[in-house]
Length: 181
Image (tube, rainbow, N blue to C red):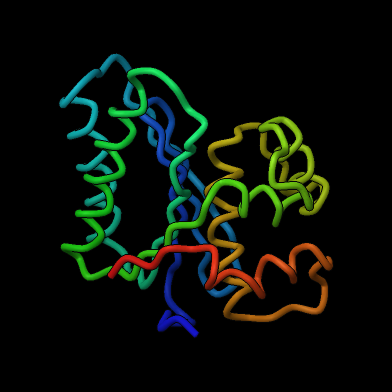
């Protein structure tokens, strides 16, 4: 079993250059926010996201960060830009000694709706159905970020309310993910 602390804050990061979703679980309670760097491009945008994340990391007692892995089906110049962002965020977490887990996108999708190739719209709808009407989200970045932290939370705290495909994801998690320390 991974060495993840069980009682402090776990954050999930769905990295994006235009709308990074940040999910938080603290003792079972969920929260989320977004980082949206308006009208910033290139290195300025990377620096803005890094500064916001660092101020959050420094001001909280995060014990674990969970990042959604890269989508290898992506094409174009954006691949390099998102790779730069991923490297900056991973280095930031490393410098602050935050245990980091990278979960592939297909694993996140399967945990949410039982299919590893579901569309963003299907994921958002499935997440809202799972959580009920008191916690309805529209943004797929925030949903993905919350799913990331919930996967680790349920990995640490087994729950009898999980569906069979969610239990399968949890059981295979160590095989499917990369741990960065």
